[in-house]
Amino acid sequence: MPATLEGMIFDARSSRQLPGEGGLDLRGIWAQLPSNLPMSFEIPNDKRVAEMGLVAWARAARLAALEVFE
Image 1 (tube, rainbow, N blue to C red):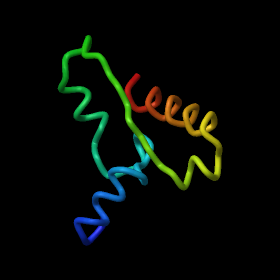
Image 2: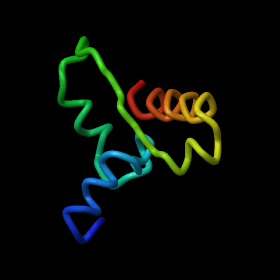
Image 3: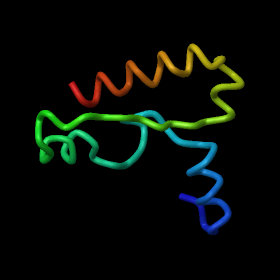
Image 4: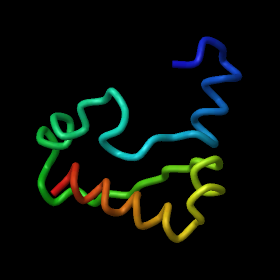
C-alpha cells in the first residue's frame, strides 16, 4: 500500500493488479450484488503491459476476471 497520496494516484493510474491478486474480497463483494449486474473492468498496469504486451495483458485480465466472477 502506498504511503503517500502521489503513490496512491500512481497505483490507481498505472499499477493495478488483476482481479484476485490484491487483498479485496472480490468474490464476497460480487456475491452480494444482483446477478444480472453488468461488469466492466479497468486494470491499467504500465509495467506489466510493457513486459507482456497489450494483448497478453488483456487476455490475462479476462481470464482473471472470469476466474473470480464466474
